[in-house]
Image 1: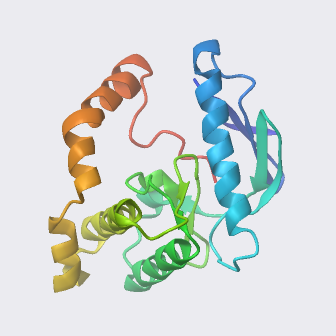
Image 2 (image 1 turned 120 degrees about the vertical axis):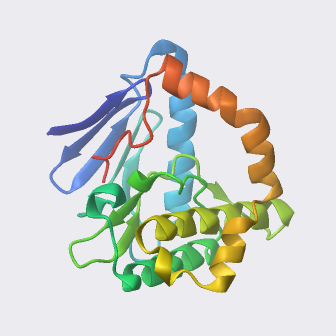
Length: 208
């Protein structure tokens, strides 16, 4: 068993080809939230089961306190630094298939949630903040736009010369959800995660 991560919300271990998220080690004040996030990830992975989408984790087992999924071999984006245009083409295709299946990731600003597999293809992990869109309403479209915008921000970091005119327009337009988040909730989030919990932007890079 290899410990990948230990924080306020519990532990993440690798056992061969399995990854086990365990909330029993969460701090008492965070245990309810840790379980809530685990349930969100579980619902998303159950919803995606049978979708045939490559590059997403396969759920193996779950209960109130733990979630076990398949390990995905790959390096986090900030370590792999993908500069092959085909990676971002495939990442866009993966994101579109995810949205078509009705799942919004909602946490794609983190480079640690994007993997580069040994054959140079994209994969996604950490669906704790994901949501299932039963209808393509205004909120779902806004969150989908933000997922896309976050992917394009990464493309701008590693391959800025390959951004299309349309992609630049997407980057320039934040959704209403994003604007509200930036002006209200994000300052509180940053205070709690960085000042109180001592997290960093690339926390959890080993969780694959």
